[in-house]
Length: 404
Image 1: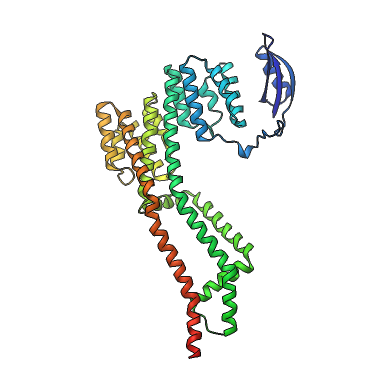
Image 2 (image 1 turned 30 degrees about the vertical axis):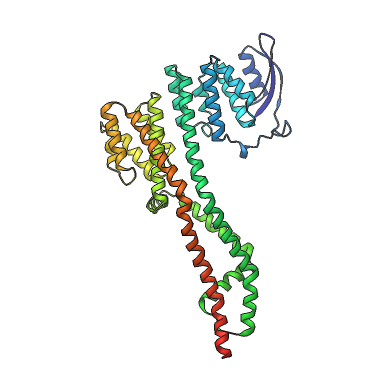
């Protein structure tokens, strides 16, 4: 349960906040254990505070907020502020109610003697394994400000990469939605008028026309059932995709696609290289770094490769061998550069070079993606319009022939 509390410390300063506890008595005991005096403890209402409603389903911290958090925290620590003081400043600055509560929790944990990374482990949905491991390494090495700066750079690269992909997909998505929207309107309002004409004339209808009339009748007379049917199909598709076997085939299918497959491979290459480089440069051992990188990847074939490479390096096999054996997932250059990095002792630097190269490649491809997709969309629109026109005009020609 959540409780709103007010306490007084040894210096007489009043402290207010919100905390989770089993009951009021447990929270009061926790306050006394800190040496403070509990003045007020009452149940906290989620709606308390007017517009600052903290609804669980909306509890999230955006990537841009995390970038600002790491950069600002790094700057303040470099300037000489204590960790709790820096976190307190950030907690006052943030407008995200959920993130504010997390920062308060981190401050309380540090005041109790815990580390920043230990506090962050309580919020795995906000702070990833990469984030926490790098923070932990920074704490151990005494270079937390530099580590935070490195995390900020990594997050910014991820943010830019995601933004470019989403930006490239906006145009085709809008066109496809517009096509289907216009198609549905025509099926509901235009086709029934033509159907009535065909029925009145009594002309035999070809299969293509009957197909369009069937879709039109379904949409105009049973639109709700049609929507539920489509929703059920989507739900079944999502459910099936959760199974490991179907996911394997789907992920393989994506990788085999002509343009998108290459883009996905380069994205995964850039993400793998940057994550590994960031972790290794922070002092995380290779086996642990690979284990964390495995969590970052989404395609099952990449996850399996990284998982198998962990077992291989623990047996003394070089990391470059695993990448060289799977050139269908990672380009040949990746294995070669990792091998050079292993030989020279500059693996982290080689990985960052790989990441930078493939991030640039993804950037260039996403810029041209709209140009590539445009003719494909035009062909699709042409085929759809042509099929509809032929299906609707063909019966009219039959009428003309009967008149002659």
